[in-house]
Image (cartoon, rainbow, N blue to C red; front, side, top):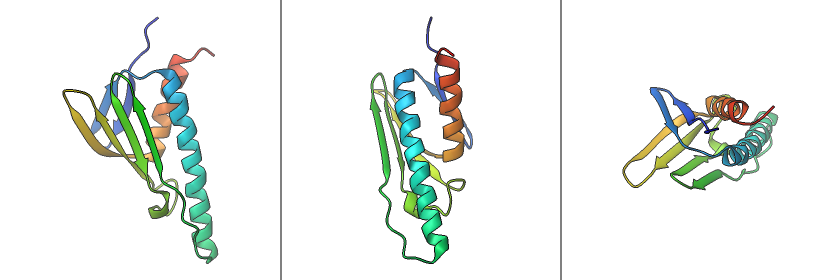
Amino acid sequence: MTTPPFRINLADGSVSFSYPPEAAQELRQHLGDLIQRLKQAATTATSGDRPTPQPSMDYRYTGDIFLEIFCNPNIWPSPFAARVLVTLRDDRIRLSTEAELSRLIEDVNQYLDETLPQ
């Protein structure tokens, strides 16, 4: 059985590429950690306390393609407003764009639902 391509939906289209489910599971873990940092930063900001700077997420995958997803949780007021910088490249093309964090999480979950046995 072949693995379907992983699709990231962007504001003005989408990009699909070969991506192993194991890497998608690792990305899902990184995104979950990022959500927690965003929630912590948002909670601290609304409490009136001086916010504790949260570390950025800088996920990288190298295989048939190079995928990098970066997000600084300190600049977004909530997880729902957050956007990530997506860089995708191989030896012929390079794509750098922003994507909504919530949409990327949905894309990862959908891909894993399609590829992993239930």
